[in-house]
Length: 119
Image 1 (cartoon, helix red, strand yellow):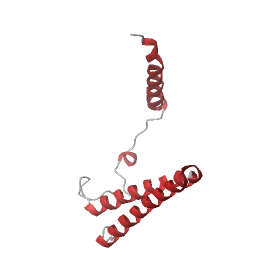
Image 2 (image 1 turned 120 degrees about the vertical axis):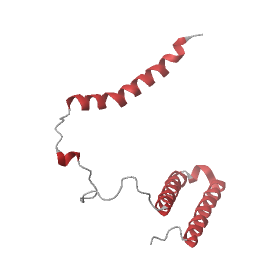
Image 3 (image 1 turned 180 degrees about the vertical axis):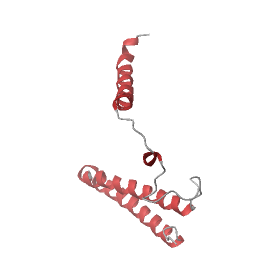
Image 4 (image 1 turned 90 degrees about the vertical axis):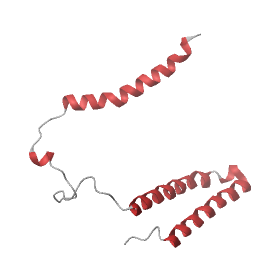
């Protein structure tokens, strides 16, 4: 077994680890640490904290967040599709339109089900 093949992978992992950990260690060692009561107090949009930090959120909040991520990612994938229309041809164009149609149907379905209504 030749271990020379694994050297680039080991170096890649080592550089990734150093790149991720070194700035945190440097910031902890060199950064100022002067806590005071206002800095250590909980902060909530300019108001004093109220209620329990572990209070439950309405499930619609999570539903809207998931729908935003879903449609945002799908919309972001339309840009490379549109940029490569010459290479993928008419078949690729029709497949892209199918994806847009499915997204539109999903959006209309969520709208009719009331998932986007906020009370």
